[in-house]
Length: 311
Image 1 (cartoon, rainbow, N blue to C red):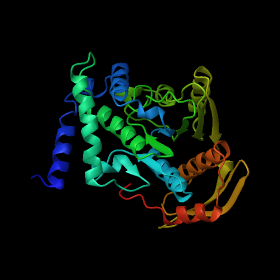
Image 2 (image 1 turned 90 degrees about the vertical axis):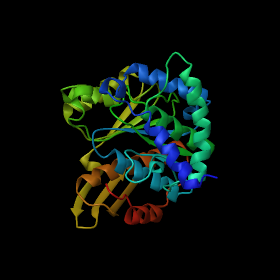
Image 3 (image 1 turned 60 degrees about the horizontal axis):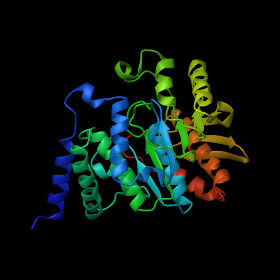
């Protein structure tokens, strides 16, 4: 009889077989989105059965995602967290309440997804790529674990990213700092890259962005209008008084009806104040939209003890 660990390793090996060998197959554009949607259709479209916080940007996605999920968890919600890449264990991509699911759960859920993959083989779209399988597995696990919120980091870009398959108008979009990345795929200018990232906004979505270069903000505003979405920018006046030590970044925060002095985040670097401000603003936004009470002491405690290993 196979041990659990051996079964787990076999699943990992099987998943690795879907890693494309060429860039053309790795970034299949619109076809890849359609293929991911087809796989999710075989799984019952789990991505439409939960509240999603969808995060795109060049830098800060993982930090922002971790902070949002930690704040929600501290207030009693069940939270799914998809971040990438994983460092030590693929289950880092399918966290429930910021913890890994056990190997047995992972294998159980994967068997269901494997059946859907076998159906794909006979479908016009053919077999999915590694990321298409992984993001579909994340949504499937989150649905089966009955999460209240799923915090999902994009892979590459936004418009043709495998995670851009959520049509629910209640999706909240977060846009982190935009810079030059993956230029061979996303474009040679900040405007082109910003457009790709911003296109995770869908009809009736709300979006929050950290402050950006003016040309990037203009693109975000144009895309929001095109997609019939709304967007707000978290500016320096929303987070200021930044002090950095070897262990913490400390800052003041203001958004909507919240004003907190001297928040301490257990990460270092002044840029982390911006990531945290965007995450906290998202949390405050959700408290208004979904009507729940924020407890300041839990926010402070969460930020002070936050762990984001290896990043």
